[in-house]
Length: 268
Image 1: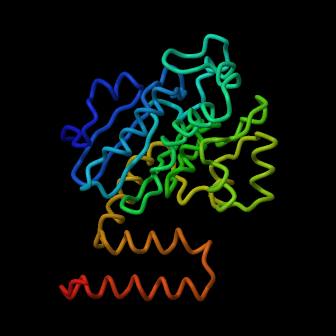
Image 2: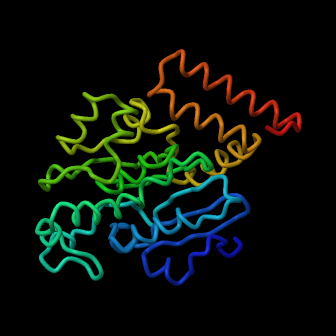
C-alpha cells in the first residue's frame, strides 16, 4: 500500500477509529475499533465524511471493511448516556436543541453515509459478523455488498426508541421493497447472509476465509471497463427508478452520444 493521497492525515484517521489505505485507483477504508466491535462515534463519522470530501480524483473503487470479527455493531452505546462521548452532544443534549441546530448536527452525521453513492466511484462493503443499526446503514450506503457467511444484518434502532436516520431507509426500501423493509426495521430481527442474498441485500456470499479474495476479484472486474463508461452507467441506473421509461431512454441516448464522441475524440 502507498501512503494515502486523499489529504487526510494518517494519525487523525487512526484516532477516529479508521484506517485509510490507497492502492492505485482503489481506496480501502477500515473501521478499526475491534475491541468495541467497530462501534461508531461522531468522531468516526466526521472522519468518514472528510475522507469522502478529500478523496483523490484518481480513485475509482472504495472498499469498506471492519477489522476483527464484526463489520460494525452500530452506535457506540455511550451516546445514549447523559455524558455522551467527547466532542459530540449526547442524545439528551441533542433532544434539547432547537430544530435547526439539532437537524444540522444530524445532517453532519449523515454526511459520513451519503458520499458512497456518488457517480465517480463504485463502493463495496465487505461484511463479516455483525452489521447492526448504523453498521447496517453503512453497508447499505455502499453500491455493492459482499457478505461472509457469518454475517448478521439488523436494523436495531426501533428497539431503542429511535429510527434509522443515517440514510439507510431509502436503499433498504429500494433493495427489498416497502413491506420487507418495514418488517426488518420494526422487528429489529437479524437477517443472515443467505437470506440477505436471496432478498437482494447482498451481491455475493462467501465463506469468511474467502471474503478478501472475493472482494479483490470484484474490484478487478470493476476496474476493467473504461472509467467514464462506468460513471455514465452508474448515473443511468441510479436515476432509473425516478424516471419514466420514455425519460430513461432519452437519458440513455444522451449518455451514449457522450461516450461515442469521447471515444472518437470529438469535443462537445
